[in-house]
Amino acid sequence: MKKYERESLSKSFLIFLVLLEVLLAINFWNEYQVKKLEIEDKIHIEMKLCAFTLQCQGLTTDFVDKDEDKEENILYQDGDFYSYFKVPTSDRYLMKVVYSKTNYILRLEKLANKLYRRFWFYSIFAMLVSLLFSIYSLMPLQRALRLNEEFVKDILHDFNTPISSMMINLKLFKREIGENQKIQRLENNIQSILSLQDNLRIFLKGVPAQSEKFSLKELLQDRVHYFEVLYPDVTYKIDIDKTILETNIDAFTRIVDNLLSNAGKYNIANGTVDIVLKGSNLMIHDTGKGIENPSKVFDRYYKEQDRGIGIGLHIVKKLCDELMIPINIQSKKDAGTMIGLNLTSVVHTS
Image 1 (cartoon, rainbow, N blue to C red):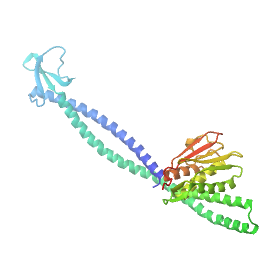
Image 2 (image 1 turned 135 degrees about the horizontal axis):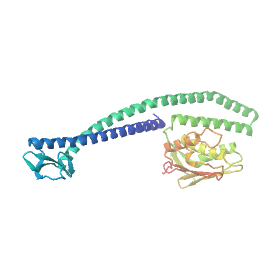
Image 3 (image 1 turned 180 degrees about the vertical axis):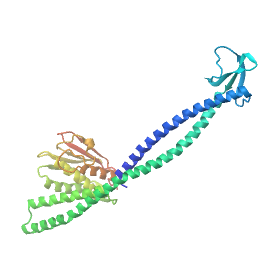
Image 4 (image 1 turned 60 degrees about the vertical axis):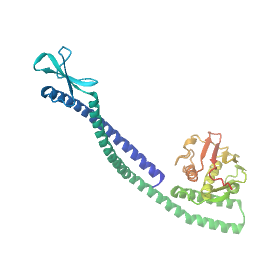
């Protein structure tokens, strides 16, 4: 199960479970209040039996003067519960029957414990129902995602034949006429298509686990040379010392390619891209159009331009998370963009 499927499952489960738990809590609270009133009615009945049968287990009795303030057969509560009853042989006195607050609290605690046990039993049942409901609701989404992934895989596979044919014919054409700037641009454009394919494969499959050591400076010089041909009106500047990284080189190259491509693609005419390493922080700063909502650029399918499909920076964030490379972005509209990569976790120290 993929990350977004797990997220969908967990959110559906939590929402449904919370709703069921709220309903259960309301139901049990109402039941508690009803049972509490029933206990008070039982106490009053026990008092009446005590007054008429003198069987007063758990109750205390006393005789008090009769007056207008003491209504008979009424349950009073002032800390303890008590009630007044007629004494058949006397018109002057009333029997006062008392039920202690301590005993009342014990009965309430017994009731609460019984309801708590039932509540947790029903909560476990609610969790199972919520889980089954979440899995059931996720199934159509999973089918749709699988169909979408299969469709993308089929397209990627179908691209291989024409792209390979173009690459072979370009090499043959280059051999016939020699080095040519237009042919070089065509080759670079084909490489861009291959790069997009790699992005989509990573989007579908995830990041390979193997790591290797490589020179950050040499990698950046190689990738900058590639993008200088694609964006000849943009100046790329590198200020990198001899730093060795140890991570998955293909995934890291994909990160760099996406960032350098965006820095060139959305730059102004005769703009610059500065690539600087300060300590363990790699910073890529461009003089481009900037971004209106920097907090949204890592969201899947988000884009502010008509170009692209909006997964490039989402894939960058995904790869950075997999390689444990924190990434941050600072940008203002018409003021350029600065992207920082914290390479502390992947810098090789001998």
